[in-house]
Length: 352
Ligand SMILES: *Cc1c(COP(=O)(O)O)cnc(C)c1O
Image (cartoon, protein in one colour):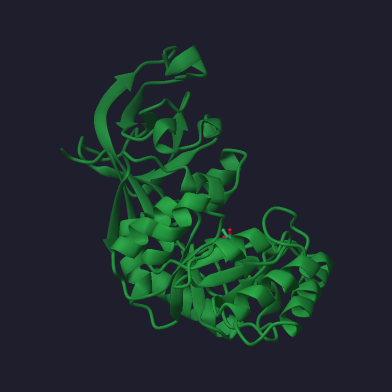
C-alpha cells in the first residue's frame, strides 16, 4: 500500500551538520541515534551516519536499539547510554556493544570481553555514579582491562547561562584526572555549540543539532540544516459553504465557500494536536492554514484557488518556510518531542 505520510532525510544536510559539529567540537562524534534517530528512522540514519568520516560510533538509549544497530553490522562501535538489566549485559557484550557502568556491582558483573563506558553523574542527577564513587568504579574497570570510555551529560548546556555546565565539566575533569587515558565524552549539541572544543575530550554526542536544530540563542553558531522533510498525501478534496464548520467540535466555520484538502497525517502519526487552529502547511506552492481540529489520522487545509489534486503532497515541515521549530511552537512543545513522536505509520526514506 502507499504511505499517507513520508519523512525524507537529506543525506547532504546530515553530512554537512556532522562535519560542522565535529569541526567545532574538535573531536569525532558518538552520534545519538536513539528513538528511531530522533524520529528520522534508525534504518535510514544509521547507515548514512556510519559512512561519515567524522562519526566514531553510534549511541543508543535502550538494549533493544543496541541489538538492532549491532545487527546492522555497520563497522562502527555501538554505545549504550542507559543501564541494561543484569541479564542483558552478557548478550550485549557478545554483540560488542559498549556498556554503561555506574556502580561497583555493575563493574564486577561485566564479563571479561565487555567494554565499558563509565557514567559519571556531575549534577544532572539522572544516571551515573557521583564523582568519588565514579573514580573507584573506573579504577576497578581499568584494573580488569574493561575501561574504554567515560562520560557525563550536561543538564543545561542549551541555556545562555553556562555556569552550571562549567561546574559539571570541572567535576568530570576531576574524575578523569584519577583514571588512565580513555575515550572521554561530555558535550551534547548544546555543549558543542556553547563551548566548542573542551580540553581532554575524545568524542562529542550532538543529537538534535545533528538533525539540524540549535537553541535560539545559538542559532548563528554553525550553519546547521534541518535534515527531515515531512510530507502528507492529499487523500480527498471537497467544498464547504459559508456557515459550515470543519472537523470535531466545529472550531472553524467557513465565512465563504472554501476548498478543503484532507491530508493523511494526524496526531496518531505525531502531528501535535495542540497545533489546532495555529498550524499551516505548504501546499500547491503556497503556505495555507489548517482548518479545525487536528484529528487522529487526518488534518484539513484550505486550498481555495490552488491547483491541487488528490494524490498531491503537502509539506508539513522541511528546511525552508515551515520548520519543526514552528510546528513545535504551535503545539506548545519542543523539536525533540515532535520528531521523536512521529509514529510507525510515517514512512522513513533517505533522500539526497
Ligand atoms: C540524548 C542524549 C544526547 C544528545 O542530546 P542533544 O540535546 O540532542 O544534543 C547526548 N548524551 C546523552 C547521554 C543523551 O541521552
